[in-house]
Length: 443
Image (cartoon, rainbow, N blue to C red; front, top):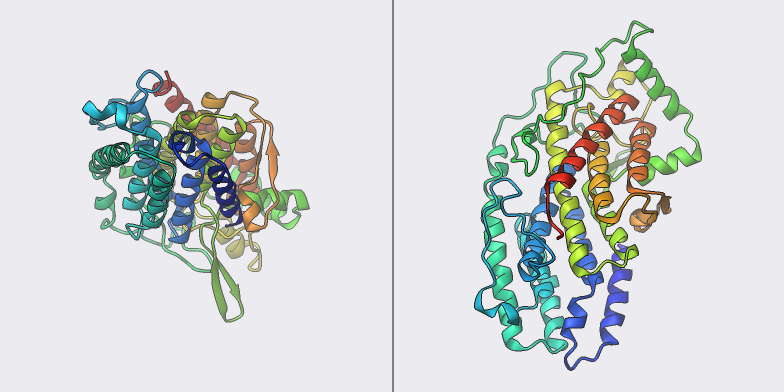
């Protein structure tokens, strides 16, 4: 993870340049420290092969916990999400020691604690937490501030952890798996891994801002028809086939840049091995950090930007998965191989869940809306997220511009039909707009 190492190196050089006698406030007010901590969780999520859907939950609770600490410490600048997110009750206040807490340090600790609790194996961020505590001591944090900060972080973490247990995640672990049948329009596992359908009951996960998983629903998918050459479905199949067979270098770059496959199975003869990248939610959490750095945002604004992005991603996946498993549509690869060309392969590896609508396009559009609400429209930036995976940077005029390019990426990759991505973008935009309008976070 070259970028993470680079960020860490820059951070350590910066910290070493500080006056170690009593500069802990300066050290922990540096927003780069939170951005790096976000990358730490990104690495844990990637390393443990979490699906994009589950990853959205990993990021959510960690970022909400971090935000709630900041909101408690700076009530004149930030408003708690209690009463704004479903079933989140008022959280414990700092108490009599409120002036002897370093809220940035506590925010980082709370982030790590929740990030560790909702990932596997639990405790995966313990070494990083130890390094944060050492950083505090090395830079002169008084013992009472150190202990009060840890105690408050634990208090907020416990409250967020208790809230997380009501999201129905545990219950969905034992629910009935997806059933494959002979309906040619219905999704079936795809090569090379032929993995079972992921998270068929994610629509039952508790939404946070959405009124329900079905609040924003696209029109039904085109009727399955591979015989009538004038049908919308046939035209979409042929369009996908043609585009993949004639990709330009630029189109390949776009597809590869937004691939975000957390675990690609590579097959060469009898040899199989996996390669990992950040998932779609991880990519957008990275973008949030990139935007905060470019905007020269302070620590609190950086935490706020990441928290609202994580909320948008979380709710958008609930919305999209409600659509996916309502219609259970077959992937282009399956249709083209069966009816038109047995040797055709998509440019990207087909993910293991139904085609309509596109999850990445939905989440990208939602994230783009909330980030626009934080940093403004026409916020130009360069996305370097994929550089550590050997994929060149791409630059965008705005977050919405990036989300629209993502639509093309999934289509160029051959894993989604064009119209599916377009409807996904519309639904994701509605989800993100709702979240940006309803949540009152920065005062």
